[in-house]
Length: 204
Ligand SMILES: CC(C)(COP(=O)(O)OP(=O)(O)OC[C@H]1O[C@@H](n2cnc3c(N)ncnc32)[C@H](O)[C@@H]1OP(=O)(O)O)[C@@H](O)C(=O)NCCC(=O)NCCS
Image (cartoon, rainbow, N blue to C red; front, side, top):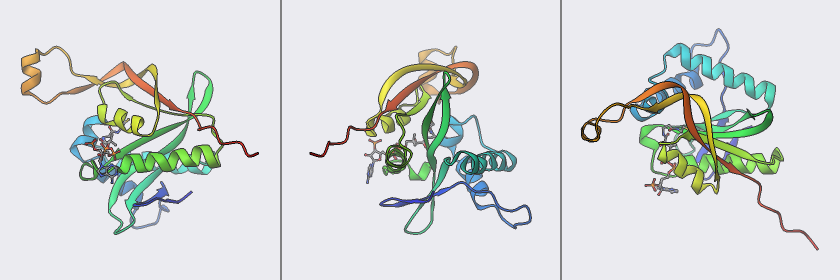
């Protein structure tokens, strides 16, 4: 489902035919994941093959599950802003919707992740009749947690998943001199936040 917000055009991730010359979304996903801040939080830059695989999987989710992540581009001139939106997600056997966002480094600080998030929450609660939407991120990803707060999501605790943790074993002096390093860890703690639909006013 295509969504148009105040500043953004949100389009489902699609994959080009095998004989097409270019694969716009997969190419843009690779571009997005070549940005330093994005690759920092996503375990390095993505190869063309990885970007294509991710885009292919997301396109299939749209087809099979009716929902998936969007590519986000500026309405004004088509500039790539990032990706984000909803995917179906299982927490302890209960199906829910997971909301996420990743912006190009140059697109941070303009409220675009919050704009993507608002559009996704509207879709979840108004069209998909969702009972809740969750989001999660590393416990030290304060920028992502700030987006959750701006969207009215409330902290719901910690999950353990494989992924990135802060580098360890360096003194506080070393930490202040060097950029923080993230490492893959089989059991990282991620903070989970949740939004439920607002109660609608009852008529009469
Ligand atoms: C997490 C991430 C999406 C947050 O991006 P962000 O730009 O900080 O978040 P928003 O798009 O909501 O923008 C909010 C900021 O824009 C500012 N802003 C400027 N113009 C604005 C406008 N017109 N409307 C709303 N906010 C605006 C806000 O004041 C806020 O600034 P602040 O952070 O200094 O308070 C981004 O840092 C990112 O992509 N990180 C890398 C990938 C990642 O970590 N993804 C999450 C994995 S779980």
